Image (tube, rainbow, N blue to C red):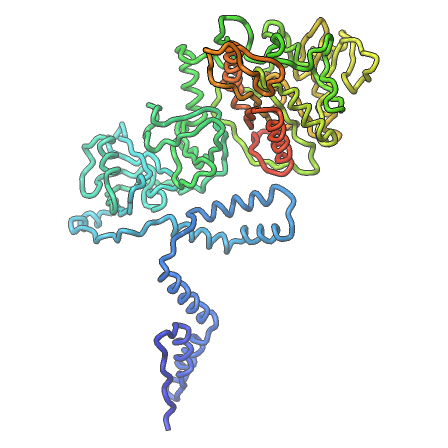
Length: 606
C-alpha cells in the first residue's frame, strides 16, 4: 500500500513546502548520491531561515510600508556621538555597542538606500533609436526618476572645448543617490533633445521642467571621481545668507539660505569657491551651495576696498547726534542706568537679600574716550578680519572639569548687575563672581579679597601693563578692574563664575581655558510712543520714568551691540521683569552642567 502524499494548504509558506519536499526524498539505488545531496541541501538550517525571512518580507511588503525617516544611518551616528560625550550607564553602553556594530550599520545603510529612492513611475523601455548609441563605448544612457525635487546637479560650458559638462553634484539629490552621474560628465541629450548648441540656462530650464522619467545621454568623464563620504565638518554661520540675493552663486535654486548662528554641516569642500552644506536639524536630505570661507572673505575685502563695506577693525560711530557714546552702556543720570542703589558714595554691589555680593561697579564704564587704554578695548585676540564661519564641535561639561565661565553683556537699561546678584544670592555655593581689584582705600567693614582686592596704584598700573585684567577703568579718580586670576580663583573652588563685562572683553575671554557661554541681556522696550512724554522703566519700573529719547537710546544700544558682537553670543535673554529673567538665567546655568553645546573647535585643541 502506497503512502498517501501530503497535501499543502493554501496558506503554506516556502519553508513548509521545503520541509515537505525534503520529507518526500527517498534515496533509490539509481540516484542515491543525488538524492542524499538534495536532502542535505534542503535540510540545511540556514536555508530554512532564509525561507522564513523571505515570507516575512513578503507579508510586510503587502502592507505597503513607508519609511518613518530617510536618514537612519545619520541618526544612529549622531546618537552614538551623543552617548560618547559623557559618562554612560550599562544600558547606554549596550545601546552604543549595538549602534556601532557593523551588521546594524549595514542594515541601516540599506534601509536609507531604499527609503531615499522613489521607484515610481515605472520606467518605460528605452527608445529604439538609442540602440545604435549603446554600441559606442564612450556614450552612457542614464535613466533617472525625478518628481518635484530638483535633479541636484549643476552644469557649465567648458571654455576650452565648448561642451556642456556636469559642474557639481549636490549631495543627497536625485543625481547623487543614483550614483550614475558624476562631476566632469559631458551632457549630450536630455529626453532625446540635443543640448550641444543650447545655453546652460536653457538646459537647466529643460531639466527643471522634466518630471517623472528623465533620460540623459552623457559621455562619462575620463577619470570619474570617487564618491566621498559626508564629512563631519561643522561650521557656525557668522552672517546671514540669502542665495536669491547673491548674483555670484552658480545656481540660486541650489543655494542654501541660513541665518547667523545656524550650525551647518559642510559635506564637501571640493570646490574652493562654493561648498555644499546642510543645516543641522533640517529634514532635507539634499545639500545646498554656500560661499566658501575663502570666497566670502575675498569678496568682503573687495567691498571694503570699494568703500561699500566699513572696515571691521574700525569702531562704529553711534547714530545719535555725533556724540562719542561708544557702542556700550554708559553711566547716565539716574534712574536710567543704575549700577547699585544711589547712596552717596557707593561703589560696590553691596548686600542683596542679606547676602553680600562682591563685584565691580559699572560706573567707571563711561564713553570710549574716557576708557582709552582699557585692556578690553585694544584686544583683537582671536577676532577674524571678516565674519564668515567658525568651525565648531559638540561639547559637554564633565564633572572632572572646571565649570564653564558665564559672561553677561547687556544693552542700556538691562541692569544685568541686579540679575547676576539675584542668581548668586539664591545659590552662593554653586555660583560666584570674580572679586575685582581697586586702588581706593579700604573701608572699616571691608576685608581684602572679599569685597575687593585692595592694591596700590603702582601695583594696579603694573598689572594693567602686564595685561592681567580682562577690563579696567577709572571712577572718581580710583581704578577698578577684573583680573583673569580672579576668575580662575572662583573656578578652582568648582563654582560657576558669572561676570558681566563690556562686549570688547569677549575677545579676551573666548579661550579653551574658560569656554565662556555668552548671554546678551536686553530689556523689553515698548514700541515708540512719541505722543507720550514719559514711559515706565523696563526691567523693573521702580526706579522712575523714561523719556522717549531714553527709550530710543536703549534701542540703539541693543542694535549696536548685536551688530558688532552678536556673532559671539550664545543666548539672547529678553528681560521682561527681574523675576522672570532670573528664572530664565537660572535654567540656562543648570543646562550648562548637563547638556551638550556647540563650541569652537579651537577650544578643544588647547
